[in-house]
Length: 419
View 1 (cartoon, rainbow, N blue to C red):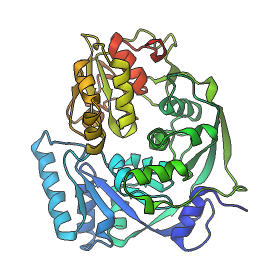
View 2: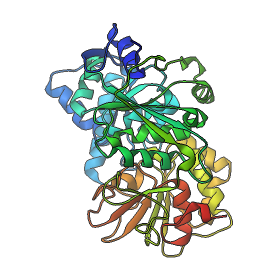
View 3: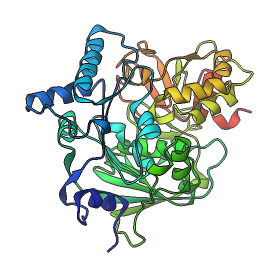
View 4: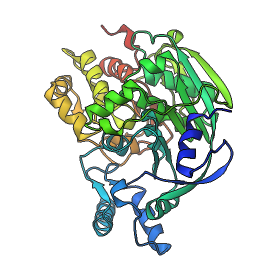
Protein backbone atom coordinates (compact mmCIF):
# COMPACT_ATOMS: atom_id res chain seq x y z
CA UNK A 1 0.00 0.00 0.00
CA UNK A 2 1.34 3.41 -0.97
CA UNK A 3 1.97 6.21 1.51
CA UNK A 4 0.28 9.57 1.85
CA UNK A 5 2.50 12.61 1.94
CA UNK A 6 2.34 12.92 5.72
CA UNK A 7 3.13 9.21 6.19
CA UNK A 8 6.19 9.55 3.94
CA UNK A 9 7.60 12.58 5.74
CA UNK A 10 7.02 11.29 9.26
CA UNK A 11 8.36 7.86 8.28
CA UNK A 12 11.59 9.40 7.03
CA UNK A 13 12.03 11.14 10.39
CA UNK A 14 11.05 8.10 12.47
CA UNK A 15 13.53 5.86 10.63
CA UNK A 16 10.89 3.38 9.47
CA UNK A 17 7.66 3.07 7.52
CA UNK A 18 4.66 4.41 9.42
CA UNK A 19 0.91 4.35 8.90
CA UNK A 20 -1.92 6.60 10.00
CA UNK A 21 -2.89 6.09 13.63
CA UNK A 22 0.55 5.03 14.86
CA UNK A 23 2.29 6.84 17.72
CA UNK A 24 5.88 7.60 16.78
CA UNK A 25 8.94 9.50 17.95
CA UNK A 26 10.36 11.57 15.11
CA UNK A 27 13.39 13.79 14.64
CA UNK A 28 12.57 17.50 14.34
CA UNK A 29 14.30 19.70 11.75
CA UNK A 30 12.98 23.13 12.77
CA UNK A 31 11.31 24.71 15.80
CA UNK A 32 9.73 28.12 16.24
CA UNK A 33 8.18 30.04 19.08
CA UNK A 34 6.85 33.57 19.17
CA UNK A 35 6.71 36.27 21.81
CA UNK A 36 3.32 35.10 23.06
CA UNK A 37 4.25 31.42 23.44
CA UNK A 38 8.05 31.47 23.66
CA UNK A 39 8.33 32.63 27.27
CA UNK A 40 6.13 29.72 28.42
CA UNK A 41 8.23 27.25 26.38
CA UNK A 42 11.45 28.53 27.95
CA UNK A 43 9.99 28.45 31.46
CA UNK A 44 8.82 24.87 30.89
CA UNK A 45 12.34 23.91 29.82
CA UNK A 46 13.72 25.49 32.98
CA UNK A 47 11.08 23.78 35.13
CA UNK A 48 12.09 20.42 33.63
CA UNK A 49 15.77 21.12 34.18
CA UNK A 50 16.55 21.25 30.45
CA UNK A 51 19.34 23.78 30.02
CA UNK A 52 20.72 22.88 26.60
CA UNK A 53 19.28 23.17 23.11
CA UNK A 54 19.77 20.22 20.74
CA UNK A 55 20.17 22.22 17.52
CA UNK A 56 20.13 25.96 18.28
CA UNK A 57 20.76 26.91 14.65
CA UNK A 58 17.42 25.29 13.77
CA UNK A 59 15.37 27.09 16.43
CA UNK A 60 13.98 30.59 15.88
CA UNK A 61 12.30 32.92 18.37
CA UNK A 62 10.07 35.54 16.73
CA UNK A 63 9.18 38.91 18.22
CA UNK A 64 6.20 39.41 15.92
CA UNK A 65 2.94 39.46 17.86
CA UNK A 66 3.80 42.67 19.71
CA UNK A 67 6.06 44.40 17.21
CA UNK A 68 6.91 46.88 18.63
CA UNK A 69 5.75 46.17 22.16
CA UNK A 70 2.86 48.33 23.44
CA UNK A 71 3.16 47.28 27.12
CA UNK A 72 5.93 46.80 29.68
CA UNK A 73 5.11 43.13 30.43
CA UNK A 74 5.46 42.30 26.74
CA UNK A 75 8.73 44.23 26.57
CA UNK A 76 9.95 42.18 29.53
CA UNK A 77 9.04 38.97 27.68
CA UNK A 78 10.99 40.17 24.66
CA UNK A 79 14.06 40.75 26.83
CA UNK A 80 13.59 37.34 28.47
CA UNK A 81 13.60 35.60 25.07
CA UNK A 82 16.57 37.59 23.80
CA UNK A 83 18.62 36.72 26.88
CA UNK A 84 17.79 33.02 26.72
CA UNK A 85 18.61 32.97 23.00
CA UNK A 86 21.95 34.68 23.64
CA UNK A 87 22.86 32.01 26.22
CA UNK A 88 21.86 29.05 24.06
CA UNK A 89 22.63 30.14 20.49
CA UNK A 90 18.98 30.22 19.37
CA UNK A 91 18.25 32.59 16.49
CA UNK A 92 16.08 35.66 17.13
CA UNK A 93 13.93 37.26 14.44
CA UNK A 94 13.59 40.69 16.00
CA UNK A 95 11.02 43.48 15.82
CA UNK A 96 10.07 44.43 12.28
CA UNK A 97 11.54 41.33 10.63
CA UNK A 98 8.06 39.93 10.14
CA UNK A 99 5.59 37.22 11.06
CA UNK A 100 7.06 33.86 12.01
CA UNK A 101 5.30 31.82 9.32
CA UNK A 102 6.25 34.18 6.51
CA UNK A 103 9.87 34.48 7.62
CA UNK A 104 10.18 30.73 8.14
CA UNK A 105 8.97 30.19 4.57
CA UNK A 106 11.41 32.76 3.22
CA UNK A 107 14.47 31.59 5.16
CA UNK A 108 14.15 28.13 6.68
CA UNK A 109 11.24 25.82 5.76
CA UNK A 110 12.04 23.22 3.11
CA UNK A 111 10.26 20.29 1.45
CA UNK A 112 10.25 17.06 3.44
CA UNK A 113 11.18 18.72 6.73
CA UNK A 114 9.39 18.47 10.06
CA UNK A 115 8.69 21.89 11.56
CA UNK A 116 6.98 22.26 14.92
CA UNK A 117 5.93 25.60 16.31
CA UNK A 118 4.30 27.02 19.39
CA UNK A 119 1.73 28.70 17.16
CA UNK A 120 -1.25 27.07 15.50
CA UNK A 121 -0.55 28.54 12.07
CA UNK A 122 2.84 26.87 11.82
CA UNK A 123 0.99 24.65 9.33
CA UNK A 124 1.72 27.38 6.74
CA UNK A 125 4.93 25.48 5.97
CA UNK A 126 2.90 22.70 4.37
CA UNK A 127 2.77 24.85 1.22
CA UNK A 128 6.46 24.06 0.72
CA UNK A 129 5.94 20.33 1.23
CA UNK A 130 6.96 20.26 4.90
CA UNK A 131 5.12 18.53 7.72
CA UNK A 132 4.60 21.76 9.65
CA UNK A 133 2.31 21.79 12.64
CA UNK A 134 1.48 23.76 15.75
CA UNK A 135 1.92 22.29 19.21
CA UNK A 136 1.63 23.44 22.80
CA UNK A 137 4.52 25.33 24.33
CA UNK A 138 5.56 22.35 26.47
CA UNK A 139 5.77 20.01 23.49
CA UNK A 140 7.78 22.58 21.56
CA UNK A 141 10.04 23.04 24.59
CA UNK A 142 10.87 19.32 24.44
CA UNK A 143 11.47 19.58 20.69
CA UNK A 144 13.85 22.50 21.27
CA UNK A 145 15.75 20.72 24.03
CA UNK A 146 15.89 17.19 22.59
CA UNK A 147 15.51 17.68 18.84
CA UNK A 148 12.66 15.22 18.60
CA UNK A 149 8.97 14.91 19.33
CA UNK A 150 6.26 12.31 19.69
CA UNK A 151 3.09 12.41 17.67
CA UNK A 152 0.27 10.38 16.22
CA UNK A 153 0.50 9.94 12.44
CA UNK A 154 -2.58 11.73 11.05
CA UNK A 155 -5.11 10.23 8.68
CA UNK A 156 -5.25 12.16 5.40
CA UNK A 157 -8.04 13.86 3.49
CA UNK A 158 -7.41 14.30 -0.23
CA UNK A 159 -8.64 17.71 -1.36
CA UNK A 160 -8.82 17.51 -5.16
CA UNK A 161 -9.43 20.88 -6.83
CA UNK A 162 -9.70 21.20 -10.61
CA UNK A 163 -10.56 24.02 -13.00
CA UNK A 164 -9.53 27.65 -13.36
CA UNK A 165 -10.48 30.08 -10.61
CA UNK A 166 -12.91 32.73 -11.93
CA UNK A 167 -12.02 36.42 -12.07
CA UNK A 168 -11.44 37.99 -8.64
CA UNK A 169 -11.65 34.60 -6.91
CA UNK A 170 -8.54 33.57 -5.03
CA UNK A 171 -7.10 30.90 -2.75
CA UNK A 172 -8.69 32.63 0.25
CA UNK A 173 -12.14 32.16 -1.30
CA UNK A 174 -11.33 28.53 -2.08
CA UNK A 175 -10.18 27.85 1.47
CA UNK A 176 -13.17 29.56 3.05
CA UNK A 177 -15.36 27.39 0.80
CA UNK A 178 -13.50 24.27 1.96
CA UNK A 179 -13.82 25.22 5.63
CA UNK A 180 -17.51 25.88 5.08
CA UNK A 181 -17.88 22.36 3.67
CA UNK A 182 -15.83 20.62 6.37
CA UNK A 183 -16.78 22.70 9.39
CA UNK A 184 -14.39 23.99 12.03
CA UNK A 185 -13.71 20.47 13.34
CA UNK A 186 -14.39 18.47 10.19
CA UNK A 187 -10.76 17.46 9.74
CA UNK A 188 -9.75 17.11 13.39
CA UNK A 189 -6.13 15.91 13.64
CA UNK A 190 -6.09 14.98 9.97
CA UNK A 191 -3.77 15.98 7.16
CA UNK A 192 -5.37 17.97 4.35
CA UNK A 193 -3.44 17.08 1.19
CA UNK A 194 -4.25 19.55 -1.59
CA UNK A 195 -3.91 18.40 -5.20
CA UNK A 196 -5.39 18.87 -8.67
CA UNK A 197 -4.68 21.19 -11.58
CA UNK A 198 -6.02 24.24 -9.69
CA UNK A 199 -3.47 23.71 -6.93
CA UNK A 200 -0.62 23.11 -9.36
CA UNK A 201 -1.43 26.41 -11.07
CA UNK A 202 -1.25 28.42 -7.85
CA UNK A 203 1.84 30.43 -6.95
CA UNK A 204 3.51 29.91 -3.58
CA UNK A 205 1.79 32.93 -2.05
CA UNK A 206 -1.64 31.47 -2.76
CA UNK A 207 -0.59 27.97 -1.69
CA UNK A 208 0.42 29.36 1.68
CA UNK A 209 -3.14 30.59 2.22
CA UNK A 210 -4.47 27.04 1.91
CA UNK A 211 -1.90 25.49 4.25
CA UNK A 212 -2.16 28.37 6.72
CA UNK A 213 -5.90 27.92 7.19
CA UNK A 214 -5.92 24.11 7.33
CA UNK A 215 -6.03 24.35 11.12
CA UNK A 216 -9.31 26.29 10.87
CA UNK A 217 -10.92 23.00 9.82
CA UNK A 218 -9.21 21.29 12.76
CA UNK A 219 -6.45 19.78 10.62
CA UNK A 220 -3.01 18.89 11.95
CA UNK A 221 -1.39 20.11 8.74
CA UNK A 222 -2.12 21.16 5.16
CA UNK A 223 0.29 19.69 2.64
CA UNK A 224 1.07 20.41 -1.01
CA UNK A 225 3.52 18.29 -2.98
CA UNK A 226 6.75 20.05 -3.95
CA UNK A 227 7.10 20.88 -7.65
CA UNK A 228 8.56 23.51 -9.98
CA UNK A 229 6.64 26.26 -8.17
CA UNK A 230 8.35 25.18 -4.95
CA UNK A 231 11.73 25.00 -6.66
CA UNK A 232 11.29 28.48 -8.14
CA UNK A 233 10.22 29.98 -4.82
CA UNK A 234 13.22 28.54 -3.00
CA UNK A 235 15.53 29.77 -5.75
CA UNK A 236 14.10 33.28 -5.39
CA UNK A 237 14.98 33.14 -1.69
CA UNK A 238 18.53 32.04 -2.52
CA UNK A 239 17.81 28.53 -1.24
CA UNK A 240 17.72 26.41 -4.40
CA UNK A 241 19.74 23.70 -2.64
CA UNK A 242 16.88 23.17 -0.15
CA UNK A 243 14.59 21.76 -2.83
CA UNK A 244 13.68 18.09 -2.92
CA UNK A 245 10.78 16.26 -4.49
CA UNK A 246 8.17 15.05 -2.00
CA UNK A 247 4.59 13.96 -2.55
CA UNK A 248 2.17 11.09 -1.97
CA UNK A 249 2.43 7.72 -3.65
CA UNK A 250 -0.06 7.22 -6.51
CA UNK A 251 -1.76 4.38 -4.59
CA UNK A 252 -1.89 6.15 -1.23
CA UNK A 253 -4.92 5.42 0.93
CA UNK A 254 -6.99 8.38 2.15
CA UNK A 255 -9.62 8.71 4.84
CA UNK A 256 -11.81 10.40 2.23
CA UNK A 257 -11.65 12.60 -0.85
CA UNK A 258 -13.16 16.05 -1.25
CA UNK A 259 -13.61 17.06 -4.91
CA UNK A 260 -14.11 20.73 -5.80
CA UNK A 261 -14.83 22.38 -9.14
CA UNK A 262 -12.94 25.68 -8.95
CA UNK A 263 -14.86 27.17 -11.88
CA UNK A 264 -18.03 27.32 -9.77
CA UNK A 265 -16.50 29.32 -6.89
CA UNK A 266 -17.42 32.88 -5.93
CA UNK A 267 -15.81 35.43 -3.57
CA UNK A 268 -16.55 34.24 -0.05
CA UNK A 269 -16.92 35.91 3.35
CA UNK A 270 -16.66 34.33 6.80
CA UNK A 271 -19.16 35.94 9.20
CA UNK A 272 -18.75 36.42 12.97
CA UNK A 273 -17.87 34.61 15.13
CA UNK A 274 -16.66 31.35 13.56
CA UNK A 275 -14.53 30.76 10.48
CA UNK A 276 -16.91 28.12 9.10
CA UNK A 277 -19.83 30.60 9.07
CA UNK A 278 -19.20 31.14 5.36
CA UNK A 279 -21.39 32.78 2.74
CA UNK A 280 -20.86 34.19 -0.78
CA UNK A 281 -20.14 37.91 -0.89
CA UNK A 282 -23.44 38.56 -2.68
CA UNK A 283 -25.55 36.71 -0.07
CA UNK A 284 -28.35 38.70 1.58
CA UNK A 285 -26.71 38.29 5.02
CA UNK A 286 -23.52 39.91 3.69
CA UNK A 287 -24.49 42.59 1.18
CA UNK A 288 -24.45 46.11 2.59
CA UNK A 289 -22.81 45.28 5.93
CA UNK A 290 -21.19 48.52 7.13
CA UNK A 291 -17.46 48.17 7.73
CA UNK A 292 -15.59 50.47 10.12
CA UNK A 293 -12.15 49.01 9.50
CA UNK A 294 -10.47 47.00 6.76
CA UNK A 295 -7.29 45.15 7.67
CA UNK A 296 -5.00 43.65 5.01
CA UNK A 297 -2.06 41.68 6.34
CA UNK A 298 -1.32 38.67 8.62
CA UNK A 299 0.37 35.33 7.93
CA UNK A 300 -2.58 34.51 5.67
CA UNK A 301 -2.67 37.44 3.25
CA UNK A 302 0.12 39.89 3.97
CA UNK A 303 2.43 38.88 1.13
CA UNK A 304 3.67 40.98 -1.75
CA UNK A 305 1.09 39.54 -4.16
CA UNK A 306 -1.68 40.54 -1.74
CA UNK A 307 -0.40 44.11 -1.43
CA UNK A 308 0.02 44.36 -5.21
CA UNK A 309 -3.60 43.28 -5.71
CA UNK A 310 -4.82 45.77 -3.14
CA UNK A 311 -2.84 48.58 -4.80
CA UNK A 312 -4.11 47.70 -8.28
CA UNK A 313 -7.70 47.92 -7.13
CA UNK A 314 -7.15 51.16 -5.18
CA UNK A 315 -4.91 52.99 -7.66
CA UNK A 316 -6.30 56.46 -8.41
CA UNK A 317 -9.09 56.02 -5.83
CA UNK A 318 -9.64 56.86 -2.17
CA UNK A 319 -10.97 54.67 0.59
CA UNK A 320 -14.40 55.45 2.01
CA UNK A 321 -14.12 58.36 4.47
CA UNK A 322 -15.85 56.42 7.26
CA UNK A 323 -13.70 53.30 6.94
CA UNK A 324 -10.17 52.90 8.28
CA UNK A 325 -7.77 50.92 6.08
CA UNK A 326 -4.82 49.31 7.87
CA UNK A 327 -2.11 47.46 5.94
CA UNK A 328 0.68 45.40 7.53
CA UNK A 329 3.26 43.63 5.34
CA UNK A 330 4.02 40.09 6.51
CA UNK A 331 7.80 40.55 6.49
CA UNK A 332 10.54 43.11 5.99
CA UNK A 333 11.32 41.49 2.64
CA UNK A 334 7.70 42.01 1.55
CA UNK A 335 7.74 45.60 2.85
CA UNK A 336 10.95 46.51 1.00
CA UNK A 337 9.73 44.99 -2.26
CA UNK A 338 6.41 46.83 -1.95
CA UNK A 339 8.28 50.08 -1.33
CA UNK A 340 10.52 49.62 -4.37
CA UNK A 341 7.55 48.83 -6.63
CA UNK A 342 5.58 51.87 -5.51
CA UNK A 343 2.88 49.70 -3.94
CA UNK A 344 3.16 51.40 -0.55
CA UNK A 345 2.95 54.84 -2.14
CA UNK A 346 -0.24 53.86 -3.95
CA UNK A 347 -1.77 52.55 -0.71
CA UNK A 348 -0.86 55.68 1.23
CA UNK A 349 -2.34 57.87 -1.50
CA UNK A 350 -5.54 55.84 -1.24
CA UNK A 351 -5.76 56.67 2.46
CA UNK A 352 -4.26 53.53 3.99
CA UNK A 353 -2.27 53.41 7.21
CA UNK A 354 0.78 51.15 6.77
CA UNK A 355 2.38 49.61 9.88
CA UNK A 356 5.71 47.84 10.31
CA UNK A 357 5.87 44.08 9.59
CA UNK A 358 4.32 41.86 12.23
CA UNK A 359 1.00 40.41 13.33
CA UNK A 360 -0.45 43.86 14.05
CA UNK A 361 -4.21 44.04 14.71
CA UNK A 362 -4.77 40.32 14.04
CA UNK A 363 -4.14 39.26 17.64
CA UNK A 364 -5.71 42.32 19.25
CA UNK A 365 -2.59 43.57 21.01
CA UNK A 366 -2.19 46.89 19.22
CA UNK A 367 -2.21 48.71 15.86
CA UNK A 368 -5.98 48.61 15.33
CA UNK A 369 -8.10 47.41 18.27
CA UNK A 370 -11.79 47.82 17.46
CA UNK A 371 -14.35 49.89 19.39
CA UNK A 372 -17.54 48.38 20.82
CA UNK A 373 -19.95 47.36 18.08
CA UNK A 374 -17.51 48.05 15.24
CA UNK A 375 -17.12 45.73 12.26
CA UNK A 376 -13.82 44.86 10.63
CA UNK A 377 -13.27 43.06 7.35
CA UNK A 378 -9.91 41.30 7.67
CA UNK A 379 -7.72 39.11 5.48
CA UNK A 380 -6.72 37.14 8.59
CA UNK A 381 -7.54 33.51 9.35
CA UNK A 382 -9.70 33.86 12.47
CA UNK A 383 -12.76 35.88 13.44
CA UNK A 384 -13.42 34.55 16.95
CA UNK A 385 -15.14 36.82 19.45
CA UNK A 386 -12.48 39.09 20.93
CA UNK A 387 -9.82 38.05 18.43
CA UNK A 388 -8.89 41.64 17.55
CA UNK A 389 -8.92 42.86 21.12
CA UNK A 390 -12.60 43.58 21.77
CA UNK A 391 -15.27 40.91 22.42
CA UNK A 392 -17.93 43.52 21.62
CA UNK A 393 -16.70 43.90 18.02
CA UNK A 394 -17.37 41.85 14.86
CA UNK A 395 -14.84 40.38 12.42
CA UNK A 396 -15.51 39.28 8.84
CA UNK A 397 -12.87 37.37 6.84
CA UNK A 398 -12.29 37.69 3.11
CA UNK A 399 -9.67 37.97 0.38
CA UNK A 400 -7.55 41.08 -0.29
CA UNK A 401 -9.72 41.72 -3.37
CA UNK A 402 -12.90 41.79 -1.29
CA UNK A 403 -11.06 43.90 1.28
CA UNK A 404 -10.17 46.45 -1.42
CA UNK A 405 -13.74 46.63 -2.72
CA UNK A 406 -15.09 47.02 0.82
CA UNK A 407 -12.58 49.73 1.72
CA UNK A 408 -13.75 51.74 -1.28
CA UNK A 409 -17.45 51.33 -0.57
CA UNK A 410 -17.46 51.42 3.23
CA UNK A 411 -19.45 48.19 3.35
CA UNK A 412 -18.82 44.60 2.33
CA UNK A 413 -18.66 44.72 -1.47
CA UNK A 414 -18.23 42.30 -4.36
CA UNK A 415 -14.71 42.66 -5.83
CA UNK A 416 -16.03 41.59 -9.23
CA UNK A 417 -17.85 44.93 -9.44
CA UNK A 418 -14.68 47.03 -9.07
CA UNK A 419 -13.09 48.02 -12.37
